[in-house]
Image (cartoon, rainbow over all chains, first blue to last red):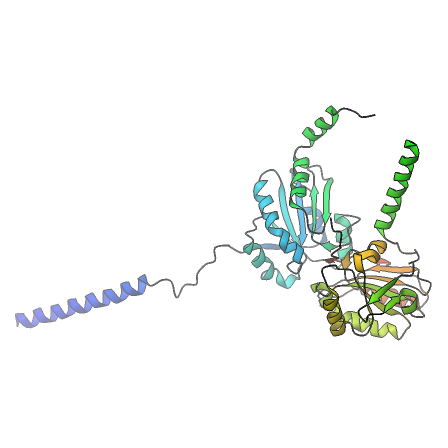
Length: 196
Length: 193
């Protein structure tokens, strides 16, 4: 009798051991069931209209750099990594925002996908307005709407620099530095000898 | 001597500034001659219809132009029969002749495509974006400049700028909106900054 009970107990123990092994093996398997999360999180892109654009054009205490772009624009995509670099370099001193002119249907797909690919962290917007002409004129009176377009607005709200077409990174950095150090630049100008 | 030189420099600067700005609505577009993808030389005056012409800056590469292919061909066909001809211009130095020719044959076969080598015409007119339309009347006076309509995607068009300009001019009425910008591809100039 005792030996039968012992045999049953032994079988139960072996069964339990095997079952535990199966469970552990399943748990230790790499997350096949769970989808792998991508390293870069897709940034949120906010849709704006012309009123939203007008509000964004007003600096919030710091100089502002705005880049107008679209995923369909080759030079826009080419210059974007340098824009990301500039955003990182001037964090806290300069507000950098991007405004996409892609279709609204791309707001949750192509636009954030590209921004994630280039690791863009600056606030991202998508402009949709039935009167693009008014929006373009609001940004710069002499701008035709060709992309990309980069504008630097000083802390006082005055346009300090604008570049229609692909920017030259060294020129853009130089223009940012000028806006960030206007007093130093003007002092140097004042101190420079007047040439007759 | 210095004064004369200074004045001369100033005059050149003004002339350059004027040419860089292009032409304005109401100005007369000078006749021009360019080589087409067909290998022949064409002029504005030889291509112009009895009610004028549209000088349309296009690109073989630009996705915005691609989105407009059907609409451009539709409006070109409709108004060609009303005496307004379309003239395609390619000023992008990044697009070679073979590419432009192939694209024109495939997408814009109903009107001539001219090659603006060295973007001289684009500079003269002040064209910077594709697509960009310059509509002149029979006397080459610029009546409308800018976008074709107000929606690149074509899904939510509420204002057909170019058609409206045509209809007004053909009816002898004042064109209410003579200029409208829209976002598009930058013309890839030979001497880009």
